[in-house]
Length: 636
Image (tube, rainbow, N blue to C red; front, side, top):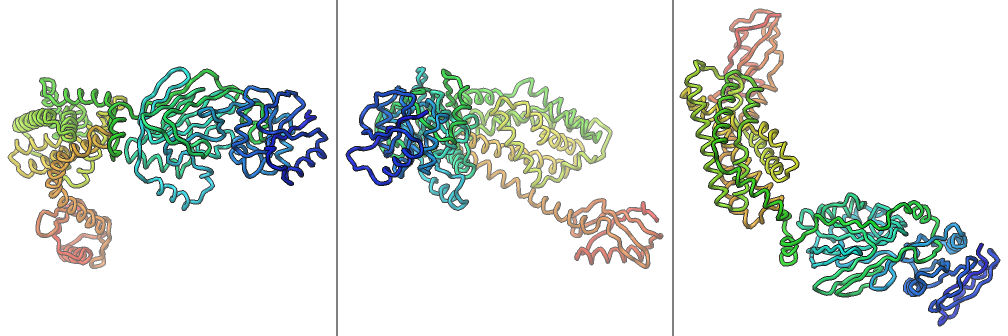
């Protein structure tokens, strides 16, 4: 039970009336002895029955706490307008009488850690450089307009500085970053930052968040998370952030660092941060006590270092010297491994030729059988995807070796497929255009979209070894060998239209995959934009040329769909006969659309009925047509 209260105050200033009123309240309400002491004096009297209440501003409270580290005196706080940071850090109520009641409650007294920065006590945080919203205060209570304003204000030039961070156990991290935020605890619901995880007041550790967006896109993503989601957890941080949890952290830089301790601006080339574990006995606000008790289970000696995605080496040096790139630069080790793999894939070999022959023969057989499963097997077997992805990397990096070897391999593959499929077709006594063949004769923009999406997937799967198994699915989606086989079938039959349509589909796939995969590699950071610009422009020009017939074909497909939609299952009344039509096919290759129909009627149709039907269809479509009516008329 508290029997004596010492009020630490600045004795150079006369005791104000509000403090006199507080003293009278304590005497009357709690029946304790009271004395006023100067905050600069060290309190040597340690008693379980004595409580020292601080009626000071933040700066003087820091001085008092620094002078009493590792002492056992009990310390509480009297709230006032000049100690906002201390109140926020320890959950002290703004209501004086509630705060005093909580301070006098012995259940609220606990040993707590203290964070120091260059030997100065820290209440809320230390911010080095620019942390771009990580230290937002109470952002969850802001309106959407205020959040949009914050987002806009943070869209500014990024300034990087080199940092060397050394932990208590000697682990050193060298990186380039825009800023670092250090907090000791988060027990007051993250009032001065957006960290959603509770960081303990007595785990003996500080928490450092290193902000380093390596591209404009990653920076925008970070700002969106910080501004609108406003909840970050050390276990699931965006890649823009690094995280270090340790008892001591030394931060250095080649140039002086501007930093703030609890909002007060300072500058230094070296910053020493240290947590003194359970070094003060404080009376904490009731709102903090439960979280403080819940964190007693944390391990004391365990350091956490999550800096894998922070820029190092060449990437860090580029960020210090140049403007932040639109897309991130890939890790050097990842690039080296991928480049070696793509270099091998770009070269043709006997295995490549054998697989091309087998996949071509399998696809051609499946096309004649009109069997989708057989054709899918040929897609998986075909080795064409690898040199196309290698070609994409060559295009984006301007590597003539990759481009030349990939094109040679592709030419070998294309010629092999055309020769074997055409000879195989010539030897087979069949001349029937199956549905599987017909489906590859009229490519349009939708086929180009398939190629583009497949190229993105192929490049991404190649760059991530853990998902390389997905390449089989990409090969199935884009279907490179079947159109080549159909082109060979057209050569075997001497049918130019079949060869042209199917080879156009293959060309669409080839150019679409190459361009989209190249852009994907660019986005993933495997080449700077200025280096990739030339190759992407040339590939885009080829894609535009290929797209011209695709646009025409797509326009025809839309017209076919519109005609089918307007007529299919539509009932006409001719001479008291109800005629329902089913559209089988629409041919737009001639001057007038030729519509292949099957009709069903409640009576036999004569020539007059059919002429009237044609006239009604032309009125409905508002254009002249040619009808090809199936003789298999269904009579109801």
